[in-house]
Amino acid sequence: MSLSAYADCPVEMGGSSRFFFNSETQNLSYIWDKFYFSTGFNPAVYPGSTGVNGNLYVIEGTSASQARRAFVNQIVSGSDYFLSYEIFPRFPDMPIVPIYEAKLMDSFGRVRVGHIDSPSGNKDRVQTVRAYNSDICYATPGATGPGGNNIRGFRSIHPDLGYTGWVGRITNNEGPYICALSNSDSGGYYRALTCQWDLPANNAAIPAPDATPVAGQDMLRINPSVAILTRRGFTVDAATARQCIFTSTRVPNMCVMMGQTGLIPANTSVYVPRTTDFPLHETMFVDTIVALQGLDFTIPAVDRTANKTGRQMKVFYKIDPNGITFSVEGDYAVYVRYMVYATSTDGFSSGGGSTLRRLDNGGVQIKRPGSSDTGPTGNDILVDTRFPSMRVMLEGWIPASSFSTANVVDSQYGSHAAIVNFDGSGQFIFPKVMCNWPERITQGFHQYVRLPNTNAWQPTSQSCVTVVETNRIVIHISPGAPTTIDTSTGSFLYNLPDPIGVRYYILSATTL
Image (tube, rainbow, N blue to C red; front, side, top):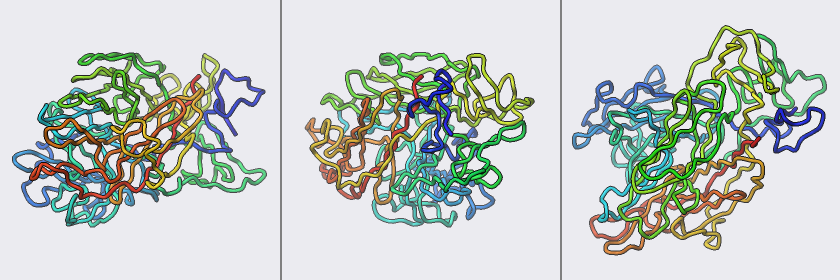
């Protein structure tokens, strides 16, 4: 079964690039879990401690040993540092280490999606670039060595949680060793929006059940009380969530807005009105890719020129019911490519009796049974032919040994690169690129270092930059590079492992 754009001829089979979903390929992307920490990292609500393990707070779970979400507030030199944990195996039916993403919302409702940080001005020897405020870490109570030695290390976890393994972490820390959140630049304190994609962040297989179709199987059921479409080989009466393409509570990521801004000059903003017939919600998930003026679209948005010393940048988006404001602060003008998903932590509507309906423009909409017929929210809509679902066009694992110096676009992106080619015609492309180290997985993090009295910047071994082009991405890593600078000698430190590989997904939405 397939569903294509409403403008296509209903009696002819369109090209697969026009499908919103296709049960023969079943290559859809899903956000498995979403969470909005609306209380925020407020030290007045969650006071810290100067103790060696700080104060532990369980956000979800009956006790620390059962906690799915928890965090610590530790006070160091008078400042609060929040150490968050999402323990993946404690979530129902989560058999993988998923792509985990966190977005921080400041007191003005802005979410920062690009940050170039040169905190010491022209004296600085480190420049940090972030697109996401999240890491996935293999954490052990009492971990020692680089990344351990204290509760703030990325390899550490509070002992009362009774867990060793992969966890999702929220961080806005500059260095590679500490995985912690501070409320600096928040205007008060941060709120957090997190999600777990139903896609592995490492080299594991995608959990997409498949079975042999049997004649007479009931795969689709739509009525006033239920809406469900199974994957091939499964029936509506017995299918589990992952055995379905959509159900009333689990739907593919649906793109409701996508586009690219014009050039946004430094210290200005641009407003993009909504194109939906329903209001946007501030917790809708938004993917962005940023390009500095005159440079490539990259994840994250790095400055590969030689004059980067002391330059700063912050890129934000803010959602209101009628549109999105993109703003930039600092020394750079930027372009922003964006994709807005219907998924949010907004509630459901009620009071309706129609599940399948034809829209005024000729499109078809399937919505959650019982949802409003006149004002459904984005979370109510299961399928809408105006809004394409996000397909996994291409995915794979590239071991570090397959990266080559011959593929490098620019050495400021990395010393080795791998190229992933695809056909981007008729598609709006957003890649997910997860760089893997033995005990950390991250995306959108890059760091430059230089020796004293030189302008010879180079990426660290903990960096990964992806150049995004129309029909390919070029992923850069830097094995053998320094970990960071050695402040005691003025030289470099080499004390964290090199990357072991990269998991990538080319996500695409059909452009109508």
